[in-house]
Amino acid sequence: MHIPDNYLSPVTCAVMAAAAVPVLAVAVKKVKEEVSNAKMPLLGIGAAFSFLMMMFNVPLPGGTTGHAVGGTLIAILLGPYSACISVAVALIVQALLFGDGGVLSLGANIFNMAIVLPFVGYFIYGIIKNRVKSEKGEYIGAIAGSYIGINVAALIAGIEFGIQPLLFKSASGQPLYSPYPLSVSIPAMTIPHLLVAGVVEALFTVLILVYIKKVSPGTIYEGAKKKTKAVYGLIAALILLTPLGLLAAGTAWGEWGTDEISGVLSGGSALGYVPKGMENGFSLKALLPDYSLSGLPDVVGYILSAIIGVAILIILFKIISSLKKDKQVN
Image (tube, rainbow, N blue to C red; front, side, top):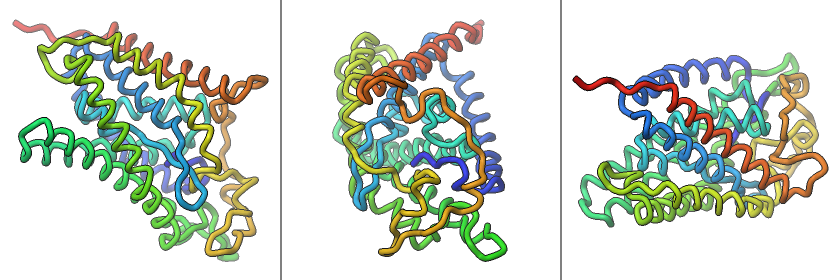
C-alpha cells in the first residue's frame, strides 16, 4: 500500500499533503496535551510495531504482495492521535531510509495508513466495545476495526491510483502517471485486502493485543503494571522473524518500477509502455533500498534493516520525551 513516487501527479501529491498536514498538526497538539513525557517512548514502541508489521509481506491473489500496518492496534494501545503520529513517523523513516514508499507521495501514504486506517479502525473498535461490554467485545472490536480500517485505506489508495488516468494525460492521450483506471485500481487494491491482507492485519492486531494485555497491561490501562521488557522482547522476536517477508514473491500492486511496469499484465495484456510522468519523474536514492545492505545476504540485510529502523524510531521518541516538559499541576 506504499505508493511510490511518480504514480501520483505532483498536483495529487500536493492535495494529499494538504489534507494530511492539518490532521498531523492536530495530532501533535493532542499528543503534547494528553501524553506525558513518561509515556512518550510508548509512541516509539508503537511506531516500531508498525514498521515491523509492514516488513512482513504476504502473497496476495493476483501474484502481488501486501502487508499489515498496525494502525488500529496502536490506536487501541495508545489512542488514535498517538497512532497517527507513530505510523506517520514510521512511514517517513521507511521512505527516506529504505525507499519503501515515495517522498513526494508521503502525504498520500500518511493520509491512507496513518490517518484513515487508525481513526476508522478505532471508531469501529469503540462502537463494538461500547455495545458488547466484556473482554469478548474488546477483541471483536479489535478484529473488526483493524479489518475494516485497512480495507478502507486500501479503497482510498485505489481511488488515488484510479483518478490519475482520468485527470492527467499526455497530448497523445496516454496516462502520465498511474495508468490504471478506477475499474482496475479499486478491485486490484480492495479484493486482495478483503481476502488476505485484512485478515493478516486482524490477526496481528488481536494476537499482539492479547500478549500485551497479559504481560504488560499498564501499556493500556492506567494504574496497571507496565512491563516494557516483555514488550521489547516481542519486538526482538518480530525483528528475527522479519525475513519471512522475503518469502512472498512478486511486487505489491502499484509499486512496480519503471523497468517492470510496461510488462505488467492487466486484462490479459501487457501495458506496453512506461508513462512519461513516471519515466521522467522524481527519484531519491535511498540509503538502504528495499531493506538490503550491499554485499550481505538478503536475510541478514533484512534483519539489520529492521534493527536500524526500530532503533531509530525508539531513540527518536525517547529524545522527544526527554525534551518534552509535562504541564505543571497546581
